[in-house]
Length: 364
Ligand SMILES: Cc1cc2nc3c(=O)[nH]c(=O)nc-3n(C[C@H](O)[C@H](O)[C@H](O)COP(=O)(O)OP(=O)(O)OC[C@H]3O[C@@H](n4cnc5c(N)ncnc54)[C@H](O)[C@@H]3O)c2cc1C
Image 1 (cartoon, rainbow, N blue to C red):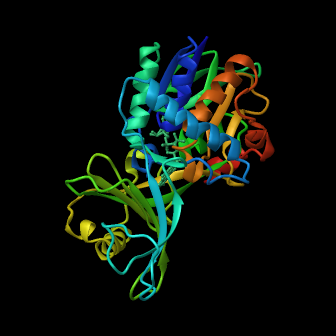
Image 2 (cartoon, rainbow, N blue to C red):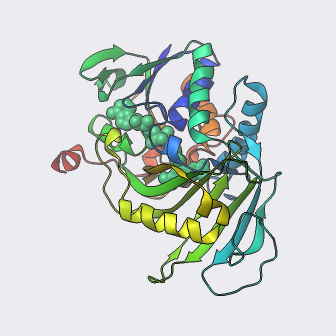
């Protein structure tokens, strides 16, 4: 069996790993570069129980455990570690905090412990994604650089994909192109996926800051707007911060995603205000990316309705790094055994949403 996976983000690479581990031939087709999009530019924060009570609870819990298992068993390094997580406020006047984070300004009131090493963790998302591909490659998977420009369906079955117009045959095709999965609505009866833009900065703090993630509400002086930054110190001596979204539409080419300078300026000013460590640190990345989201906010994981051998795995929104391993594992079971065993995929069945009319897509 030969499975073709369209898209080399955290989701595509995790599926490649779990399939190849079971002895299946896998080719990942990536247009731009491994983890070039959200999978390389996201926070990489993982939480065991923050999705409890939601349809993704089971997926998230399974995936949190799988992250630990993968880090312990694969001979590679993607900066996996457990950490504490705190919540607090800044810019609302002097408030008393209940916890002290040495790297935060005195004006920041840290009022809540949100997670501990038993419930929260992190990875470097780009390093994780690349490591999944390397691990898959050790089981025989291959990566092919090229743009997927079509999926061939013959007699109700997906038989091949087109890469820049050239045909590559396979027994199953998985669409895992993040927000660009909407392009596959031209080729398969799939519901649309949208891209929501987020900006982030990476600071080089030279020495490692303690393993303390922070989720703040920050009232911006002047505008009075309330921002919700997320700050993740990493083991490599950097701090990743995200917190300002953007309205710009998804560009067709992943290489054309550009940050908005106004958003980055606001993010930087906020960072310098809330932490003396960030105020003194050079910025080594100024970036933007799009998280994939379906119409009802739940992932799309399952078969393309009515087309044998065609599948989709995307729409993981703010939890795509967390949920990548369990998605990969469940997709491997679905493709090879006919049903997922480790996680119930019913809430994520693509058939729950109407397919996008291809004529609508062509119209714009
Ligand atoms: C600011 C921000 C912070 C986030 N923080 C976290 C976090 O802390 N924890 C967490 O769990 N999640 C987080 N997320 C969400 C997470 O990053 C995403 O859900 C996840 O990366 C999506 O992965 P993906 O593989 O589905 O898509 P992507 O990473 O977008 O990958 C899709 C890939 O498909 C490729 N592609 C596109 N078109 C084609 C084509 N035609 N042919 C071939 N390849 C193609 C692209 O180049 C890209 O590499 C965050 C998201 C954002 C925006």
